[in-house]
Length: 233
Image 1: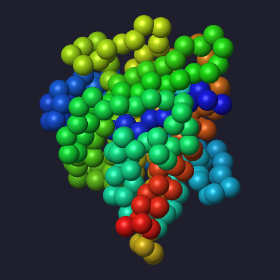
Image 2: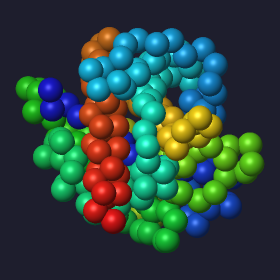
Image 3: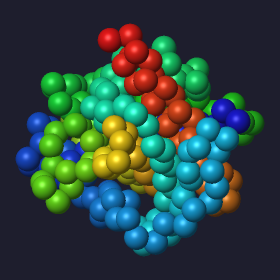
Image 4: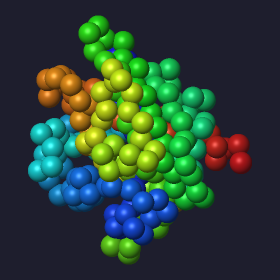
């Protein structure tokens, strides 16, 4: 199933004026906070490689948010380094042929990027979106978040967003990567949480299935790449 929603985009909980870029992000701010909350998650299943999949309802979306998590013996910084390296995605993401990525602007800690999702279903248009990505530190309240993301609204960022004719632009989406230290061993509980609507008129159950499959695949690719980088360092 190549209708692929590959999101690795991040943003600060702080006001947009505190970031390195002036962005309109208010529409996804509350969604991001709802994803951060540990309450009301319901476990769906566990994969063969011990990835736990959970979901919960959130007010800002008709879709369930999805969380995947696994305990790993790898520092969160190595994982965030992989996520931020947008230029290297084609070398390790399983479904890299299903999308095209490029960086619009970047600093040492954040970037604005673009992704074009290629759809191979009949009578369905490709998707596109611009995003902001950051690993800037948060307030002490959110110090267990290593990175986080939101989609950017084209109406609030006309200076660099160039929408393409015949493509569906995605506006509703946010997600974050979290970590928790295991005090009994040198391991970390790593989780990736997102909510994203792919646009169009797909039924909700199909959207959630696609999102679930995509987030698991992304989680595997990112963590496997981080583990490989650790071994090669």
